[in-house]
Image 1 (cartoon, rainbow, N blue to C red):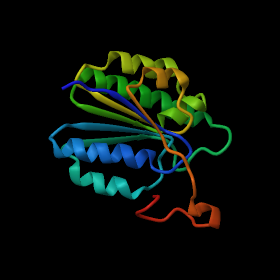
Image 2: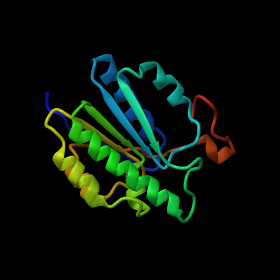
Image 3: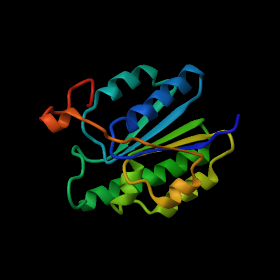
Length: 171
């Protein structure tokens, strides 16, 4: 089977959700999945659900307990660098058929990760490995390298009415 590179980007809701749906589908087919979550360290219910598939889905997080608002801190740079090195190691070992780099597009946009590191990862992936990149502000170079790009467009969102992130739905 040939693996491709997907990007889920845009200002709309559903980028991570789409990637996690692919992870579940892959696990259902017996494909091992590695998920690197950048910029995320806070509790999220999807992690509890994914623990049930720990024999096929591995999640590692490279973010602080909060989502970055404003200027990234030194710790954000350190965590992102560690995350990219870990992804490269995982890719070299060849244990997984799917790699999901959640919020990596935004990490590149914020300057935490060099776009060259991501293009290198895409370029070195074995033919059968599927790579999924999520996050707003996908870099033009990554869009060019990708085989599938979906832009989530926000048409309407209940956040505008003051609805906070709800457990089990947005967090």
